[in-house]
Length: 228
Image 1 (cartoon, helix red, strand yellow):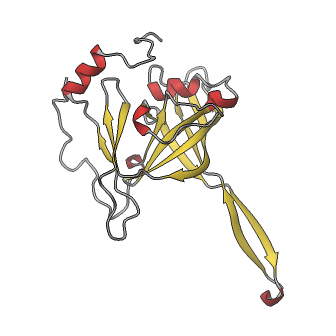
Image 2: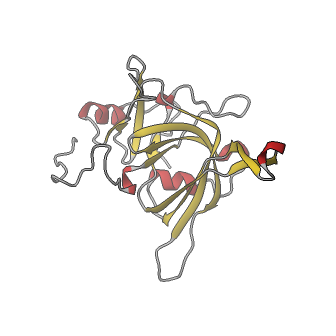
Image 3: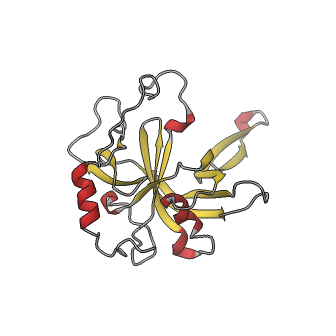
């Protein structure tokens, strides 16, 4: 069923000026990543993903760049050194409260004992309206914990693998009939113009009636028909 409500005026943040709120940034994780024959995550087709929003229960996201640097002193430097950044590992540390039944959290928690390719996936990071796509590895997963009389906690880190990428057109994420899980589409006929490097992402947070009907009557290939 289509959403029959709309946001109250003034509560929806739009535009690109002023001080942005952190919650406008969003991380989506593919809970059904495709791994090729050599153990790499396929980034070529975003439409095959089940993109679960990592938002519910999450109260802190901390990005990091983990830079590799060299420090060299040259004869013309007067005894002082030059620093060059020769590499980076992009990471995002998440922490919050465990929420059972949330597709993104359940997926991450299920990888607690995982190693190798089982903890590899791909993510879409949306930063102030623009998306970056990357293969990633789930690390430092702590799926539960805390005081006896407190909510269970969860924490983990998403580590990017290799150079992140941009969508080759207009990327749209559309909410499916499964709450907090989105489908992806890239319109490659639309390209950046002028000084734009990429196009802003479109996120549709309401499942369309036709999509909901399709999801409920036509299981995707290789699905378990809803049994978990």
